[in-house]
Image (cartoon, rainbow, N blue to C red; front, side, top):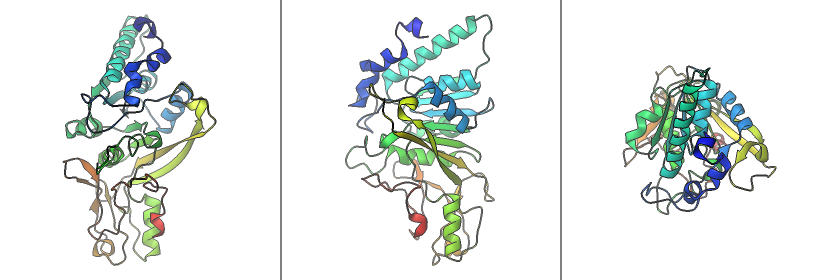
Length: 316
């Protein structure tokens, strides 16, 4: 595919078409964020990430912010599953479509074509309700390169109430039980199952599988220089960790719910399941909270610190 385009991947990544949005978004792409940092996983780390996602041919893979589509192509060609992607930067999306069409053509003309999954790349904003079904229906595995707050405070305009990460959290909660999402920056989803059960136990409340809709695990992916390509100087020794979220089955049904942990709240005492998501003032799904306001709420914090599962909310 590189040969047919006339440039290799690194040359394409250095081009203005890919890099321009690192510094300033084209207003024709979106007015919802200031910039969109580009980055990709190196092949070895890509393989490890697919293993962490526990991917198989029957999965439906989603890349939120697909860039030039290398992750979707890896999933479709190497795993053989359906792969979906959404990208807000038109130039990156266009390059991804060229890569995709050239690789599909090459595979079709090969004497031993590889069985590959369907590839569906979409240009658009992840927070747009128009794309909600595309981003959630039948999706079983999802990946988000939101490293170091690039979908949070680093790209948000002053005065905005919600981060892109808030909408990603809502999308994950709308996925069906069994779905797995891997992110590079932790999401604010309320308490995970272990935290919720520990807090309910501390407050003398009954344990319940409805306490939380997900489990959480922080995983070491590798050293930066072997793992990621953020920029032309990606040679450092920093550890790169990812955050693995799994949607859990609950007695309440397929829709995600949680329980309040306030010992003074009737919802908590009576084990009333609370829907995990709610539509905000713009009709977009974000994380819900109990009416007593005790349970963790997903409004972002400007500093970006503590707005994650690594906070001390479970100790309150």
